[in-house]
Length: 536
Image 1 (cartoon, rainbow, N blue to C red):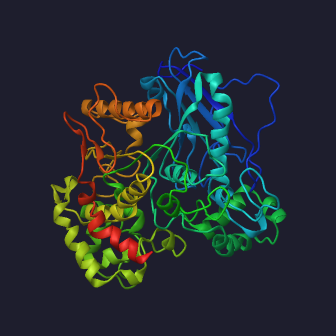
Image 2: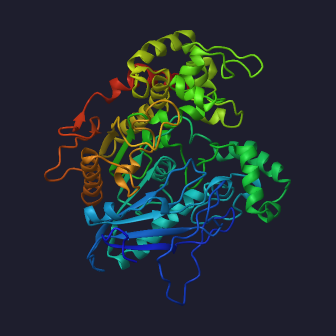
Image 3: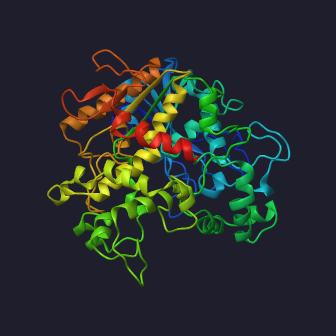
């Protein structure tokens, strides 16, 4: 169908695979009639999602104007975020990204939650296949993404694309999937020639260091018991609603994702990158300047009443001023100290016993008084001005920066440093303090929070001013240059230096620039790198 924006053609809802429950994806039965690709396919099941079905492995193809079938255009394949439990490809319209760069963009669905990432001993492969060795289980959502890459290899020429010029990209969980796929030396070789990772080095030190065996023996077994099953047949007989209900009780919001020691993910990304045992392609990798602001309110539960939180400038500001259940209990509330919140944020960032181990940054034994004092000095609230409260000091913005630096920014730098020993790496950071946000929902500006970069690349309807519109165009062009030429640089664009430099994406004249101060601004080598190295 013609693009609603009048810039090219969209092919929506193309089924690239069937999704047998807790098995590798399979090629769909060949169609014998013509399909009209003008409707998005079903999203994969997730809690509260609309238009969902287990047969959800659809993709969407965005073709630029006047593309000929023999054009051999470069191709960008995008994997969405959502914590491995939510999201869909259709949420990221890519008309302008394709048209501005005369390239094809493909957005994909993949299986989510327990249906996509459960590793359970009853589901282990009994025979080797394209994605599994005998005894493997889990990673079905990653298999889907790599199956989509195979579909692109086999079919994109029919849309005017070049299967030899594919870049695999993703944001958040999608970025983590790209990183995991870089380790897939047995299953993803020659499916892409470059990679883009947006905020995907999350917990580089911890998240994907879960082995298949340990996952099967712990939450995998607990999930089976919660379903009331003792066999694969029983588990596969349960309804989607029953699976999602058990998922919430056993895995919480976050405790799902790739597992290693499997054919598709043989090593942790850290081990693979540091040893050079990964698919060696050029990489663009980056973060947003204020990653942690997206998560802070989720991490400081239980929260005060919304009106009180907004008046105080955020949950941390409130907890420092008033007795609360975060540092005390509902029955015996206690006013927090700044160091107390830092300690809880690092070791037990959520009261949920299921989620807390997954999103904790450091082991409790590593969080000493000396460390919390150092962090309180390095991230003082006085350095963070809340524009919603006449530039009053913001403990919330300071703590969000602390958590984002530790969990995302410095993990990205560590991953980039390891990769750069073997391949060309270009690092970037979106820094737009006035990045659009719908409303004041937490008491402080969200700035360039996690996910903010998506507004600048995809057609999400963000209310940009003129400088931000120009920034969005510049970012799309850097992306297009990289996909086409394996280098983000191009004529008339400010120079984008390779790692260890970081390209800063900020609106305004002269604000696209390469800098060498990312490490210093995020306290990577001075605080977070040595702490993480000593405590993992």
